[in-house]
Image 1 (cartoon, rainbow over the protein chains, first blue to last red):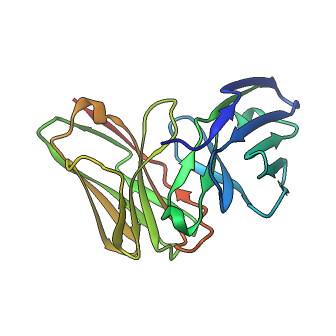
Image 2 (cartoon, rainbow over the protein chains, first blue to last red):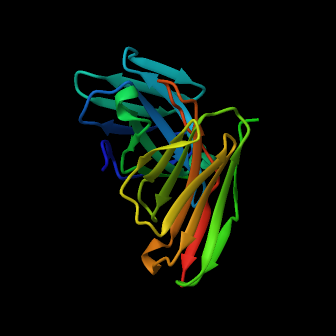
Length: 113
Length: 113
């Protein structure tokens, strides 16, 4: 079953603009991860934020985590056509979750030149 | 080497065939996973192996049979599949500890005719 819900389901922007997507989850987590998937390919791990962290940066990516609201956001700054992909959040409940990642439904991002 | 490889890339099989999907990683990860992904959906966990032992079976039908011959290899044996089993099958690996970012292979696109 899915733990995370993502918003929006789809996002269309132009190159150079920022893209923001949100993820909400239901139960306590050890960490939250974001993955990117290009059409028909495997998922690529982007960034992991632990439950005791509030913000994390990696290149053009910025992730926030609000455990009180059980939500996270992913910001991609200065988007490029190569950022066109589906983005999934995934929550890791820690050792009690027995290695399961709970994926959100995903946000499809299209960046047009 | 942070690569997970999967073979074959594409597989077409009849409902009476027996085939196998293969996955390999050389990152020293002791947890390996099989996921099934339908179009425009998030990955669904099928099996988890931890230290070469099956630790999670997400109520997957017995026509899917996983095998972990050693710490680097993961197989998924397929027999008497149904057309609804057509999907992208993804393998992933991770550390077996409490922080488990997963590394995904490119997937096998399976079509059951």
